[in-house]
Amino acid sequence: MDALAAYLSPTGLVLALVWNFAVLSSIQLTVRLIRAFSIQRTALAALALTAATVPITVVYNVLFRNSPGWLPLAMLLTAVVGWGIARWILRLRRRRSRVAAALGVGLLSGPWGAFLVRPPP
Image (cartoon, rainbow, N blue to C red; front, side, top):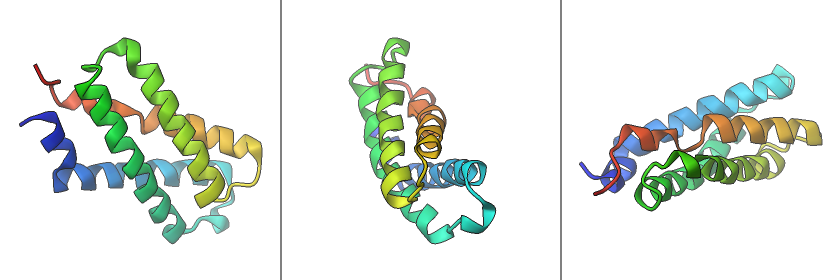
């Protein structure tokens, strides 16, 4: 199975969505009060994060062939997306919380899935 088919398959997309929901849930529960947690807002944020992380992972796998040298750049892009999601979707108010969320998203939702699929020849 080629990389693009694996990432864009229903199973691949659902796995990415579930993983991103878990990542965002853990980050929110770390940086804000449990009573402020919203399943609906987290689900929307997970959809947005999945819409960003799948293309980043595909580009990392296909274009950069899972080269470890390019992994920090892919993680940085994911972290920037995470900061935006924390700011505009999750509405984290404090800068410190948004930075923590961005770091968590960059590290946990980076293109790790690319290492599960062999890059194209």
